[in-house]
Structures are given as C-alpha cells and as structure tokens.
Length: 124
View 1 (tube, rainbow, N blue to C red):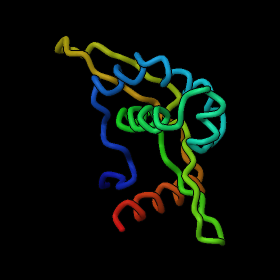
View 2 (cartoon, rainbow, N blue to C red):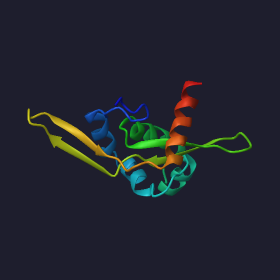
View 3 (spheres, rainbow, N blue to C red):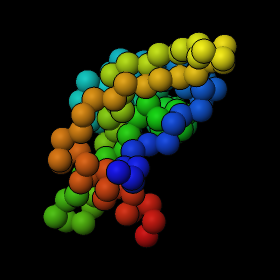
View 4 (cartoon, rainbow, N blue to C red):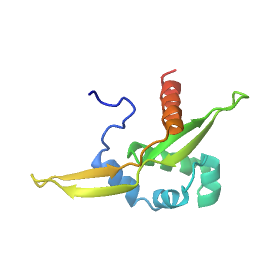
C-alpha cells in the first residue's frame, strides 16, 4: 500500500515548538472550535489581520492547521481554517532524540474533498 498523497508530511519539531510557543497561535487554537476565515479569527482573537495571516502560516507550517476552500456558486471561494490535530506529543525516542507526534482526527469525505480542492488550487 502506497503513501496517502493527501497525508501531510511529518512536521518539523522546531516548527511545532515555535507555533506552540507563540501566544497568538495558542489563542487561535483555542478559538478554532469550527472552521473560520482569517477575518473571523482576527475579530474573535483581537489580532490584526496582517498579523493573523502570519500566525496562520506559522500554524500551517507546523502541520497544526489546514486550509479548506469553501466553494461558492458565485465563484468567490472562501478559505476557512480548521485544526489539523487532536493531540501533540513531544517524545524521546529510543536513541534519545526528540521527536514530535501529532494525533489527527479522521477526516470526513467532505473534508478530504475540500483538502484535495485546496491542493489543486495551489497547483493551478
């Protein structure tokens, strides 16, 4: 069985630590109980929109956040952000190296389709 092409690459430990060390990123994680746009998050977290986009990138680079494209009939698609994890563990391997393990929740078919559409949009 081959690797799932939609499965995220393993995150870099330092990216995860940087994101989790950032208080704005932790505020965003606390607020994301449902898919939200950057504008909605900016208002809910009281973080300026320009800063919000940087924090969303930081969380995405750490594989802690996913972008979902909401397809609209008028052609004006919207990007919503969702948490991409249920649990983050920092583990000490047998060879005494530190690694990160991220437990992800199962995706619904709609979420997988949205993620696939997001990937296709990035390539276009």
